[in-house]
Length: 352
Image (cartoon, rainbow, N blue to C red; front, side, top):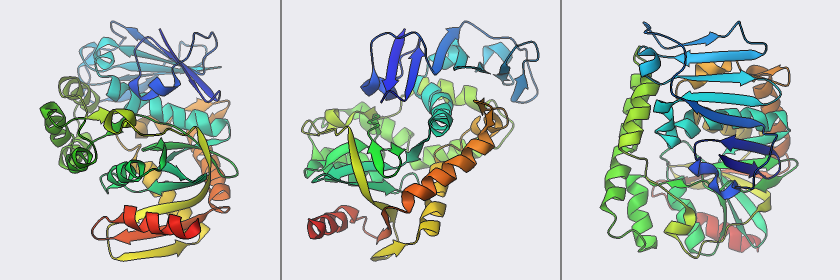
């Protein structure tokens, strides 16, 4: 059994290792907020479509997700009670990345909201005790910018998700970084750690923007998408590496006070201030982009935590986010050449 304590806010236990939470690995504890266990198979036969069903026989809110292949494909159940209990079949356990990204992280998002925190889709860095966030749609160039910042002395808190505590505190969430084919070239120029790692190059190409776009289109069709995704990513593992394996000199900072949020944009060459309402719209849009793959949309109808539905929690998240954005400065930072690092460095120096 593996145990993870995320800043004493959420405790997770799992009989499958969760690499994305390795930074929070802890000693054994009894009461968990989220637990994951594996069974050889779950109930459910062949179907015409993928579907979530409620378990009317359960004493609490419990759902079962099954696809066309029934027990031969990907299946899981979620029971919402005092804690959230997730049960997966053997197939899902073969791909730890799919388990975390498509099941665990969406549930963490709602657990954080229920406790008054935001799990925000953003990178977080610190320079001279001043923190800033980077927000962007997938495959914009955020990770490349993060690597350049860390290489040049910035402290690292996160690359993909940041935990926000009001009014403007960021807590680290240093998951392994997904290295795209573009970022791979930058990583090589930044560090010689993976010069001869051909598998990294192949995996980064397979899990490129084009590959993900294809999977998103496939997800709109009546196919066993969770099963396909699980089998595919168990064969070709995503190119994920910890920041310290790419840059050995990287400094991970536990928390920081956030002063600025930058929204990266690949058009023009300018830094434009944003009002709180506009920043909120962009932040919500970018965060939602991180949670669009099935079965997220189907899960929303059934999630209930401490008596609150997913839709009520999302409204609460917007309120929390509005409060957070109202006490920091927000900018759209535009660069056709992806020169965001240079622009951020100049802004940081001028501030210091």
